[in-house]
Amino acid sequence: MTTDQIILFTLFGAVFGFLLWGRWRYDLVAFTALILGVILGVVPTKDAFSGFGHPATLVVALVLVVSAGLVRSGAVFLITRTLVDATRSLGAHIAIMGTVGGILSAFMNNVAALALLMPVDIQTARKAGRAPGLSLMPLSFATILGGMVTLIGTPPNIIIATIREDSLGEPFRMFDFAPVGGVTALAGLLFVALIGWRLIPTRGGEHQSGDPMDDYAEYLAELTLPAKTKLEGKRIRELLEEAEKNDVGILGLIRDGKRRYGTSQNTRLKAGDTLILEATPDALDEFRAALSLDFADKKREEHLRAEGDGLTVIEVVVTEQSRINGKTAQSVGLAWRQRSVLMGISRQGTNIKQQIRKTVIQTGDILLLLVPQDNATDVTEWLGCLPLADRGLAVTEDKKVWLAIGLFAAAVIAASLGLIYLPIALGAVVVAFVVTKIIPIAEIYDHIEWPVVVLLGSMIPLGAALDSSGGTELIAGTLVGLTEGLPAWAILTVLMVVTMTLSDVLNNTATTIVAAPVGIQMAQSLGVNPDPFLMAVAVAASCAFLTPIGHKNNTLILGPGGYRFGDYWWMGLPLEILVVVVSIPAILVFWPL
Image (cartoon, rainbow, N blue to C red; front, side):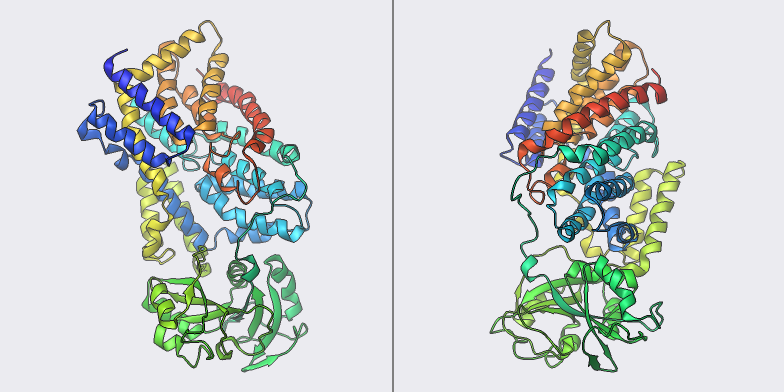
């Protein structure tokens, strides 16, 4: 080995060791390795930060922003609110949620797909009276499997496509991963839905983790029927099924400024009626989007939308010193002084019988406020209230749902047909989402996982240096030597098992950056087509099911699911074996050597 190779192997060994140790976050470890590589002369100074402008890094960041836009537009509600039902059996629920998660993760980042569906799954588990741990792991695995189907579904596919472009002159296209990824994902989803969930360890008194604000999350709120509404003439009782589905309680009705007590179930609805509801902020927003309802203070809401970059939802606690304590939102001029709308009040143990704006606020009340984007701090300080921790509450722009879907679909089709470069297409969608105010411009950077960007930006130059120094050729030669005389399927299997093992204990992006060039070198050493080897790496790097650290999705469910570190392999090990058994023949069929 040359000196450069020794230094690079040492750096990669140190990176993997520190990632396994877990004392420091992976982005700091990777960036430190990059800086050391430049100082030691194995990474050219001019290429030190080339990874931050690499297409793979840009696509990962852009996909996360686009995913957030699809969520904010209410596009995903079109699917989840019609398919999720707490009365279904656990197996049926897992099958449906897994299918939805798999499909969504094929067209949006699989981490974002899980982040979107996880609250839905937890809420459904609570309604059904079962522990969320019984369904969260299958959902996580399903979103990981679905991400393998398209180029943008998971970072390893994006990285492999760009490595192929750098090495072979042309990247993989949007749906080149679909034949192998689709067959593998389908087999995996069937296993998860029919068998896998039964293998998850269960414990008596299983921990059911949730939002610590659950005891204070129910708000009394008001939503109004707009001038043109499909609900005109319907009875309130006809809304109860939709309300139950969204975990919303309908408490009563306000018409012409007067409250009608009880639920008034037989009352026929008219435009301008105000429904009195009890719900969590998320449930309230989903119910509003599902029935196209307005906020109670419609004129103020329209004024806010016209003059600002968007709206956001905050929660504040009223203290004795608060300006609004002992007064109403109307009397303190919350609307005209601070351009804000009181959406709901959470008051434990007290039945509020007046309209929200005319209710006298008390010490200890939690207020749900609709405020201009970036003015949350000013409004909170003016009221003299205490802000609650940000729970990621947002206002769904449900009137722009088809616009968001259309923009995203057009970009995917254009990129798939080769009419426009994928990063440019996704960048255009982000610009369009901002211009049309689907995503407020102030929120764009909040949706990007910067540690992942730093990891990619740091590891890509190191991977390129390892390749240019002959390091990947050395690794490939060693693997070829170990598999000498074996058939092609056996060689692919060895590559998959090695890659999958690394991915289970390391970040899948770091594993891909190292394993993809090795796969190309192995193919060149054997004198065969490198594409089957790249596909094997793509599948193996994505399928990290044995530990909570191999994939972000597995990490996300660790706490809410109440899992232990060793719980994953019970379902994960047979699933990984199934993935290898199914994907190797599929690779040899669709990507011949």
